[in-house]
Amino acid sequence: MGKAKKCRSIKALVVEAELTVQKIGTIQVAAPLGVKVDHRTGELETPVELKLVGQPVFTPTIIPGKIINHGLQKACLVVKEHGSGPCRLSARSTLKLDIPIDGMHDVPHIKPGDHAQEQAEVESIDIRGIRDPNHQGCGEKNILMIKVVYQVKIVICREETISVPEHCHRDSDRCWIQETGPEDAILNKNDINIIVRPFQRSNRKS
Image (cartoon, rainbow, N blue to C red; front, side, top):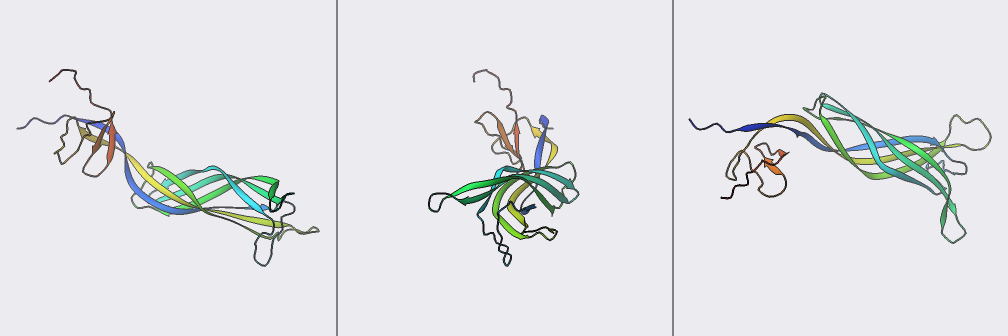
């Protein structure tokens, strides 16, 4: 019988699913004083800009076969007005916002305890206005409907204990160890990249 290969166990995050989804952040706020709205189309007649502050913060919840996502985007709504120079705009007022983001997606085979990593890119920002239906006072009062659309790449991983041989060769069909670099990168049959600490090599000269 051949000599049994020595193995060691390591914990690694194994990718269970990768997907790209669309998530939408929405909020309704009272229009700042002086913001005019075309009530036929909902388009704003006053220059308004939404500045996003940092990246959205997601707090996903994983249940069997599904990821439920809540998130929050910090933003600042800037109302502008024409300045003294031609075609120049200056900020007239600002409003700080926390825009909630919600989403739910079916992902087969995932389960509670899995880890979700999400990376978002903004696809579009839309601001529309409507009359406030509850306004009973004099004058006109509007509500702004703000929508931010994201494209989100989701990677869901599961922590598993994997047995790794202490010695592998390039011609092995089970794994391959990189001979250069500070770490040993092992690629197993399931195409899972695992990073482990380097082996302790002796200082004896051949």
